[in-house]
Amino acid sequence: MTALLSVQTHLPASSPATVQPSTAAAGPALVALRRDLLLAARHRSEVLTALTFFVVVTSLFPIGIGPEPELLRRIGPGALWVGALLATLLGLPRLFAADHADGTLEQMALSPRSFTLQIAGKVAAHWLLCGLPLVLLAPLLGLQFGLDGDVLGVLVVSLLLGTPLLSLIGSIGAALTLGVRGGGVLLALLVLPLFIPALVFGAGAVEAQASGLGVRGHLSVLGAMLVLALFFAPWATTAALRIAME
Amino acid sequence: MLTATELTCSRGERRLFDGLDFALEAGEWLHVKGENGSGKTTLLRTLVGLSPPDAGRTTWRGVDIRDDLQGYRRDLVYLGHPAALKDDLTPLENLRLALATDGVAASCEALGSALERVRLEDHKDLPARYLSAGQKRRVLLARLLLRRVDLWVLDEPFASLDAPAVDLLGTLLQRHLECGGVAVVTSHQPVPLAAGVEIAL
Image (cartoon, rainbow over all chains, first blue to last red; front, side, top):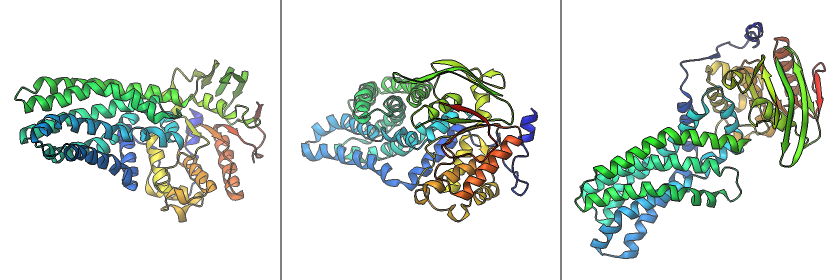
């Protein structure tokens, strides 16, 4: 205790002693989230890459298939979902790589605050920068496939539930392949099979709406998977990151 | 305050050190010496709890660090080899974020005066990518000024620093020890401090 007290006098008298551990300071998740958003604002091209990829890939289908409205309407939901899935995958190898290389990840792990919450903040930033723009753009791209208004609505809802799920699952893969040579390919092989349930129920919901069936079942399952992932993915990601840093 | 008992670490098949013991009391510092690749960084990473040792244990204030990691980390600053700076952000932003990560809120004046002490006041709005290696290390020194904790673990803190910065770090370490702090330092350069406990790996 005496040591603690004496350290209080650590700063030279000239510098203002306004630094104190503050309970009012933003939560660990928020700090990590804000930092990643700030970094993205300085480096916009990375954000636009995934979005551009999504637009280009989903536009290739109508161009390649030609003016066959029936066929386009059939494949639309699946094509849009696959596009969103691949666009999410595109940014994943970089999710932790930069922080790992420059030592930021170590500092986060050594912080007295929860590492898991900080990682959750990073994943939230990934979704805001990569997932949310996809959700917002999807209805516009859906028009190319001749999807109706109510179908587009379901598409948005399914992506709103699905893209955070993809980010969360992807973060586990990104953590597991961190520092592995050729990690990008391995990451795709590891994560894509895990994306399949999201794809089945997400695209399934949109197709169900298009063919006049109820969508509630599909969306409920998607929501349940999201809740499960919200609970377990940050924890699994943190565990994998700690192993990667050893 | 900081003790290590029978620490054993290996990297791959190679045993780096075996049965390492030391004890540091308040005001003492440990100078870890050894050739490149002899395991200095591994020892430091083991001491801060990033890598688990193959055997042995580390205690802080008499408690095994694995039993109270949260409390240990509140008392700890670790400056590793990578500078942990974001190239796209300015030293000021980097410093503020590093402190926020540790849950410490710092006022703009405190950040500014810390950067002034490490002579970066003219560069505080310049993205860190334009800083030299030594200037980047000096941003780390500013972190030492702003986070008041009892245990400093510094990996090659004198690397690429110029003479005034070496003096500044020497003074900071001196004051840290006088205030009852503990430091673990690896360095190939002579450390401008009264000799501490030494370990050669």
